[in-house]
Length: 383
Ligand SMILES: [Zn+2]
Image (tube, rainbow, N blue to C red; front, side):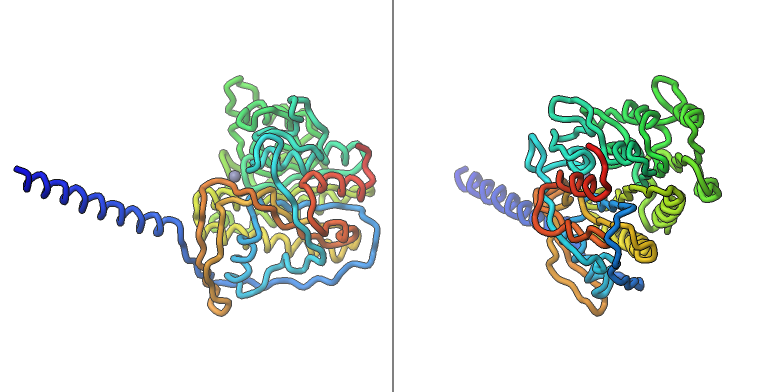
């Protein structure tokens, strides 16, 4: 009997050992990934600008785009990125009022309003009181304003420029705030929050009454040459880069051309929103494709800014997503091996790149709230 029991214990021990071994290898399998970029793209070269006048500011946010994401994309694109044209670089600290590891709501609020706030807040302070954002102040100062994103419009980053709410998950309330925001050019997705609502309001027709040209396709959007634009192409998010094609960069450049008709200048926020989603899902190939799409757009924006001469371009992230490590790679064939350490955000500081007049203000290590204060000062806005 005792020997049967001993045998049973041995059996259980062996089983748990082999299960443990399997789990360990499975864990390894899900966290380390390799990606090879078969089609590297050409990057642009831009010259530093001579003017010191800042007429326009274009803030480009790679959501969840940490230094490792940029480094991996640089290897995968055979050692070149458009972002490398930026003449000044710095680091931004991302912590929020009640957590070390922030989210896009609190991080976006810091950059858009100059205030650190609580996790999941949308342009309200820690007491829940609404705050003015860069788009509000720019609009009051006579500038035109725009936002272009690849996510749904009531998502955190676009919302901090257009809404105020204690809870980023209140997407229907946030969508309703778009009616009172002063942004002239709005492009993104999440149409159902505007016209399939539990309160039965049709915000798209309400936006039309407010003077917006409301579009639901790119063709319609592209035909518009002036005036206020509200373009909401899809329900949910826009698809990932492989399916989306060059829609993001087309929308960014279209928005810039319309906003630039204003004599006093403009402020625009352009977000590569889905970089963050790929960090959350630990999907390295899609993550690289999202960064390429963002960087290709950076190249187009920098070329435009070079020609304009009075436009400051700031490229940064709100936080890092995925806890990414670059373990190996090959600059010749564009392969990278990376490891994700989390399905959430991490607390590391994030890179800031700047080009154009005033770019020299974006060096050193600073809090994310400083992004707001630097832009306010350079555009001569009243707080
Ligand atoms: Zn995220």
